[in-house]
Image (tube, rainbow, N blue to C red):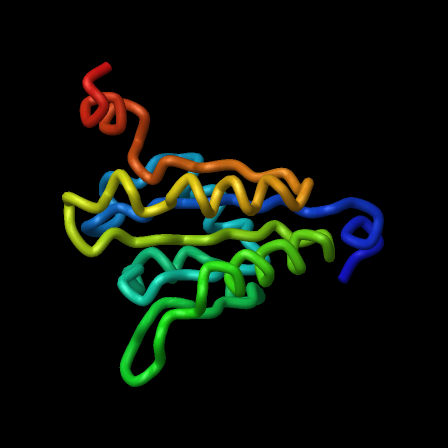
Length: 138
């Protein structure tokens, strides 16, 4: 860990991954994936998306997979906060399992819990701005 990381807290980014492929992925999301130092992701996040993360990053699947249950939200939040306190650029990637759940992939409860840590938290839309605006009706 660098001296910079010891002096400054990191930041937690929440990314709602696109349901299919990298095509709709916005530039901000791509840049963030390429700079991430710690990544906690759902099982259904595509390997194509995870391939953008540096090989030096600590990457962990926290979603339900095979015989392993998903980690509880409180434990995921604790891992995110601990890594950010160590000065890391932390990324939580959620992947909706259906188009209907895309808007609720990152719930207000998770966001509120993370904001209560006092650490900086930001939601990064996965879709490019023009595509995102078309979904919201703007």
